[in-house]
Image (cartoon, rainbow, N blue to C red; front, side):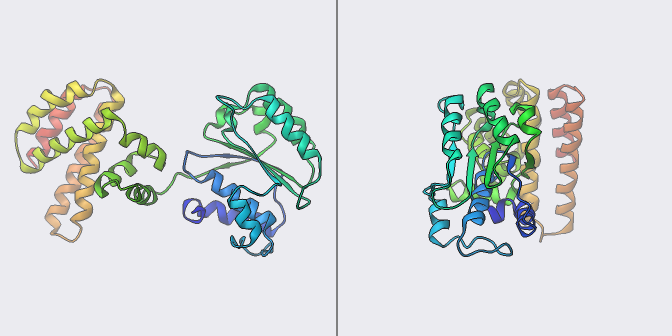
Length: 308
């Protein structure tokens, strides 16, 4: 639901509608799953809804709103990549249809998904269309990579940068996909969207790393000195790249955070110990970022956590 994903931008557009100041072109940037498409569908329903006025949200229930939600409203046109790109011929065909009046209203909406995949000729063919817009035509460019959109397109659009999804929403979405609660919690902490979290969940290296950190964490929690040896035997060979090394430390931090979440009603000493451990992990991440050896940093971290 867009009300949960991007409530701030929903309020923003409600104010825009109340002042009758909707622009003719928007560039909406956000990660996959951040609500770009849902936001544009909400705007389209607001434009065409037969039951709403400018002080209300679209009803979502009238025939027009339901047809829009089902992608069956003829005055809303989508352009999506054909193969790896959006080609100039696709844009030309759409422009020809936009010259004609709307089939069911005096307004038209054009939605360009994955707009970063427009060829230069396709993007340039839209410039005049944007520069001399019909007052009843609204264009929405949706992208995950704004930097790949021509500057001439960017400069002619109102730019909307969607906020990352709240971690709780990502966790809930993952659990709806039957991912266990703790795993969903971990993935949500490491991802900006549900789609990226699922990609991580399906990544072989990540699953191996997660299993290894879980064992490392267990050794530390039991006060087992093998935690120190485990760094040498498993983690060093597992983490060849700096990004992987930082991720492993981040996983250890998240495991402590998970335990802390479940211990908030226990004694203060346990909470303080967990908080102190998390501080040590954050310090280790800083040392690693300063190019100290991963093995030395992790061994020292194990020693300090074992001797808390």
